[in-house]
Length: 215
Image 1 (cartoon, one colour):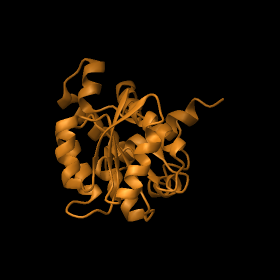
Image 2 (cartoon, helix red, strand yellow):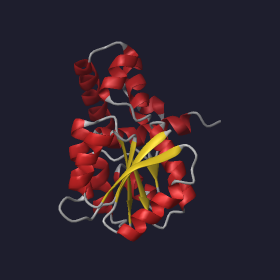
Image 3 (spheres, helix red, strand yellow):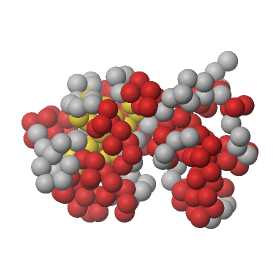
């Protein structure tokens, strides 16, 4: 069962979404919050697997809440669900650590699928959002082929795990190395890719390895 926290200051939308998600047999809404400050407190109390996070809210906005939550609970998956598709909101959310970004007009069935996708460790971007993100990380996104990367096998392995949404702790455990070593590898990877943070690297890796496996 995927435990979900819904965060939105519009009670009508929030409660409607909760009702629709309650129809999903593998999703349980464990709590609701009307602002980011309450979301931070409820995350500590409820330990949800996935958080649906609005952006513009009173007291504490979604970007700030995302950053604060992931600082203490880095294993939590955060999916932004908002009416705003401006590049600034998208990019700030992803930099804060959100793994997905959808608009509120997304059908509830697709939102449920996105929750499952994030829970498996993969990112989820809406159809109008993805082009904004990949344009931001161009020119790498134009020709993301592995032969052009000057990375060791271990660095490629870590890059692939980043694309799967793994945390430093999870990567260290999987590869039997220290978290400090993982951080050093990631720093080298970011430099080689020419990107500014792990979110950009993860998105790049998802596109790169997906295309590399396509016949």
